Length: 164
Image (tube, rainbow, N blue to C red):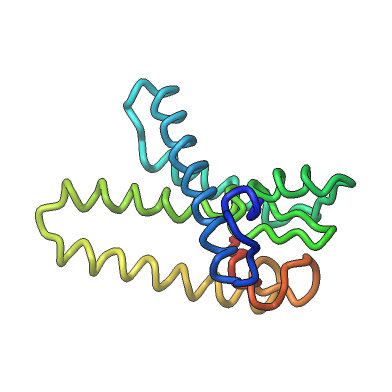
């Protein structure tokens, strides 16, 4: 996929990340506009976040998929992590959509909030508790981004596979 978005040969990990970030951003915008179209522009940001959490959970605990065709692996790798033929899927949409979904919910609440300092304190409490719970679960289960084995992502890019 990187070859499609780069005019030169790519030897730099940062260039690969940037190219996949652009593809992810395009998919995220299309998906948000699709949801807005389906709900007639009455988007409920909590529902979008719940959809994103569900997508992330499903993809985080599925077995890695490989197809016999390198190009199909690259195409599918934009949505889920694929394995095989040295394909690196840096920003799988179904795992990463949780980040813009949470940002949309927070931005909507921030616009409507009268006391922004109190909102930041409240958000800090919940996100701190959630982060501690996810860290403990990750270290205990060794699943998701804490997995020791599995996947074909090179060491330099393994941090890109955020998951629940």
